[in-house]
Structures are given as C-alpha cells and as structure tokens.
Image (cartoon, rainbow, N blue to C red; front, top):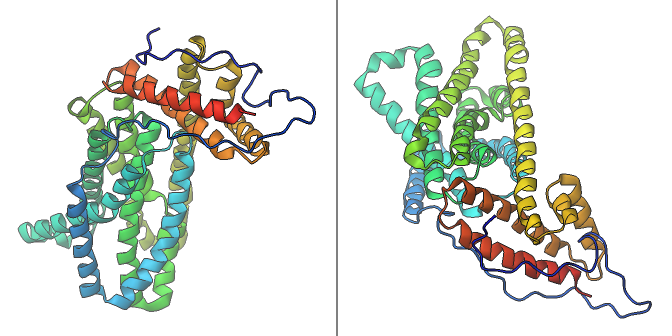
Length: 403
C-alpha cells in the first residue's frame, strides 16, 4: 500500500487505546489541557463555491424580496416568512444530523441553501412567466401546471444547483450521503421561499383559517417533500462521485436522479386533485402512499449512513495496517458508539479535552474520505490532503494524551 505523504507513522503508543488514560504516578501533578500550535490546513480548492456566484445570488435575493413586497405586501410577506421558518428549521436540523459523520464545508452548505432559496425559485418564476407568454393556453390547465410543469421545471433548476456543487466542490462531494445532504439543503431552501409565498397568499385570500390549513398541509404533512425530491438527484450524483466520475461523465447519473425526483414530485402534486374528493380522501392517499415513501426514504438514509461508517472503518484500517492508528482507535473512530465514548473520555480529562477529541474524529473522517478519493482517482490532490490530515491527527493525538 502506498501513501503519498512522505510522513513516518508515529511511534507505538505506550497504552492500548486513545480512550484509556495512561498510568500516572500517585500524586503526580496534572497539567491543564494543552494548547496546540497552529495545525496545517488543506487547500480549499475544490471545496468552495466560485466567488463570482455570490453577487449573482445576492442580486436574485434582492429581486425576490422586491417581488414579494410588491405583489404580496410587506405585512403578509413577513407573516409568511415567520411561518416558513418553522418547517425550515426542522428540515435543516435533520439534514445536519445526517451530515454529522463527515461534515461538509460550511461554504458549500451555505451555497446549497442559498441556491435553493434564491436562484432555483427565481429561475422557476422566470421560466413560468416566459412559458405563459409563449403558450398561454397551457396556463389554463391546472393539471399540467401542477403535475407536469412544476415538477420538471423546479427539479431541473434545483438539480442545476446540485450539479454546480458537484463541479465546484469535487473534493467535498465523496458519495451518496454527501449528495443526499446537498440535495436536501437545496430542496429545503426552495421550500422555504416557496412557503413564504404560499403562506402569504393564504393569509391574503382567506385570513388566519386558510393560512392554518396551508401550514398544516405544507409544514406538518410535507416539510421534507422538496428535500426528498432533490435528494434523489443528489444520491445519483453521489454514486457517480463514489465511482470516480467527473462532471461530464456524471451527467447521465444526474439526469436519472432528476427523473426520479420529478416523478416523486409529480406524485405528490397529484394529491391536489385528490383533495377534490374531500379531506378524508386526501388523508387516505397520504397515509397509504406518501407515508410509506417517506419511511422508505428514511430507511435508505440510515442504510447509507451505515455504509459510510463501514467505508470509514475500511479506509482507516488501511492506515492502521501502516501503523498510523491502533485497532482500538479505528473501532472508536468508525462507530457512533465509539465516537460517543471517545468524547466522554476526553471530556473527563483534566481541563476537558472534548474539543480535541472532536477535531481528532473530524480529521480522521476526512482522512478516510481523502483516501477513498485517492483510490477512485478523481482527486489528484488527495495525497496532499492525506499529508495534512495525518500531520493534524498526529499533533491532536499527542495533545490529547499528554500528561
């Protein structure tokens, strides 16, 4: 096995595991938790959004604010905003839980949210307006607008942002879990802005009662709908990333994933026409069809997380074979229970060293991901990341275990 770091594995530890304190002489003084020197940092290239996109997103945000205030009014838009924050917060907290194993760069996370909340909404509105002007008869068909036009147009523009993340963040897009996270974030951003509009219109047209019904439908029954639709595209791109594909080769996966998202979106929007048979009919449709689909999605995410943990163990096992980790450390770093135990042990040390343990776990997860990218061949800079992360892990381990 070849490691492109030029570093030598650390000396064997004088104690069996990073989760067990070394023996100390009775009555020996214990120093406070050490302050580590500045650690090397991996290059941000391939882990951040292109800087020129931010002014574009800012302009689109201003345009959307002007649109809402002009056509819906400041008061109704504010009420819609406050109501939309509730399902948005629930979805974001859930996505962050999914992303805890190997967190994505904050810049790309913020870009995904911002794209979903601004660009995908703005482009959808512009396209819908252009289509209405070009083919006015289509706007007369509610079925076409809800079941065909909306799913295709919305999933395309959300998927376009996901494809940009895949392209810009090629060194932070490692597999299906990452794809699900980025896709869900874009979907959450889209749903947030769309909810502002729906809630504001409901308040204007029917007052608090209509707003309450719309909130029930969108925030209680389907807060994860858009996140789930776009996560399908992200999952497909994640499979392409795991296979070492670059953007041109991954387009087929992107299209297939987007088609799956479009079909789920159309299936959900079709419920609008079931409501005509009464609320009882709709709830029957919801519990018989939509709830099992959501349950299947949750099961899929759990399985993907388990696969990510298995891959982490395998890649860190490569380093353990080369002397960088003990088998006990691999057990700690590659299992949820082991990570919890490691953090608890670090917190019990004099002065508290839980932050050091968190950094140790985070860098080890990033190391496993870098190794996987090196194996797939899609990241020429993976060896540099490996060098930096091994240096960071060695320094953090020394700080954790110092007397």
